[in-house]
Image (cartoon, rainbow, N blue to C red):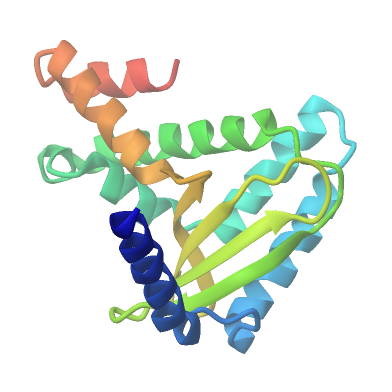
Length: 190
């Protein structure tokens, strides 16, 4: 009982200490990212599958830094890839991201709502969102300034990192294909 009270008190202190770091309002560039993303989600809503594929591809182009995602997902393999292999790997990562976007069932046109945002020590922003209607999935966007605006370099869907998931799959495919990058790229695209 005493241990439970101590853990509860520690959790309350932790939340109170974190509270100043998480804001329900965000910096203008974060608000701009969310506004642009929501406009894109509305445009994708209630489309045919081919319309959703096109819309999700536009979301990936405008909201996600696919180059950064591919580089992070490839991890050590990136340095072993030829320029052509990097281009091919980037393309299959983008195709996979588009397929995941289409597969999600929250394209009702309802915008994502801001849960909170904070800037990390390295300058990246962590933007927590949740659909304003339907199932309450948490999406945390790791945003980085690309010199023009903020773009996502990772998306956590209910706590699962897209980059980590892609990195694990890349590693497993390399391991099962004797380290052959071309075979890994072909298998990743399936």
